[in-house]
Image (cartoon, rainbow, N blue to C red; front, top):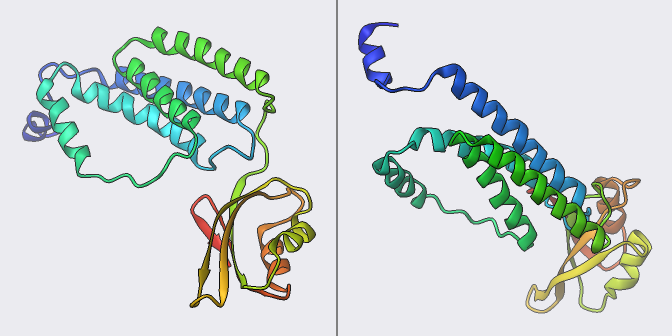
Length: 227
């Protein structure tokens, strides 16, 4: 590398690239463990589809940030200023998900600050507590069917529950919202449902759309929508 690039991109007390790589790899592995614990202790009705991936990436990113900041207070304030311009609009519905996000952040921070045993012991204690509480609350120790949001627009005189029972049976569902639309000529309803693994989203949408009284059908999962 030319001298001017070396001077521009390096510091006198820069960390060894191999050591940085090992720390990031350790953060990746431990972040995956946190993600696995979340998946195994959260039922399909409660789990967020994209959160396991987010937990892994978050651990790696926090490890990177911790190494970049080091003991430099100015860098820490610069990072806060840079992140303050980013607006996060995703609403975490379950406080348990928030706890796992913090879990991944602390694991990444511990690895990045060269204290891997803090991360390992934290995973052992926190993971054990998660499994114990999941068992106590009756959650299945394994991933279930994904949670989806079903959006319907129907005529005012349509009874929704009988129609949903025909398609979903006694599967878990929860009414999220209901309102009038088209100047009171129709109703819009949103349900949180757990789709049977034997039935595809496309099949569910087509089956509902063929029913009398249903005008529009939307199914959202993981940020995508099928109509």
